[in-house]
Image (cartoon, rainbow, N blue to C red):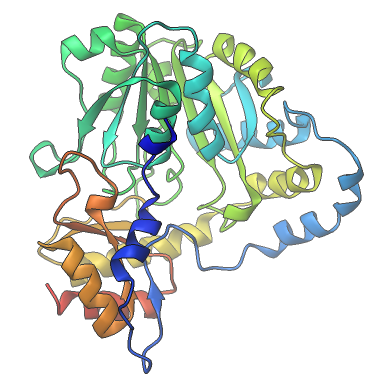
Length: 373
């Protein structure tokens, strides 16, 4: 079974670039990974430093009340959502949830079936393999405006659907009416939606919606079959803090909370203290940086649709493998080939560019990339 797991996209890129030497007279610019290149805000760092004595205590798998309250406050401020403490679980980032929740939820089913977008964050695929689940890949391409969908036959069969809006890698976002339709289908066909919303705080002007908002509008106030994930990794430039949450259907979360006591993924208490501060801090300054970078990308690639969401540019280049090798060899700029993120041909012809540096670096790098189109 282990042989079914593919190497991660960044390992594939390393193999692609092996033997190529970038120019020594130019700085290496890595635009492959969604890792913010900005300092984690000092209040977060200070909270972590001042609570190191708590390392002597075991953390609870359910998380501390103060962290949960900070995350509930975030949901209230950002989405006008009022959830109860039983409708949210603090998590060790969202990657662990995306991998272990499908295993929890699909366990015991005779023919478990998942669906997720294609191209995708590779953890989705890893989870499906760990579950031995049948998979419906939902193609994201220019013909469907990078929006996921399922046929009625697939809706009738699927048990778990992973959505990702704003999307990695395409930047596409599901509008509120599209999210409402997904909620209606989840209730009608009785499948669960796990909505990955980790890029919800990165946008130019209009904030994207949450699947939880759509659930309320559909009068599904108990969030039956609806779950949302979020994280501070991008919004607070703190991916190393590993702080996220899963929120929604209380009945599912009650059982999942019990499952998590066996997983060993409790958040260390100093990290919870720092996370509390991070969830309470405004991320507006960071949002403005990414908004400016998105605007720069739109101005430089004026003939290419650039989504005003997330911090990725999904750029059509032709032969994406040769494009990545050429930019690395000639300019010392690293991009991620779209085919490394997709299956069955999706992602081919595209590269993903992460706009995670300061304005000047992004301006110069994108200007250089344009010369090779």
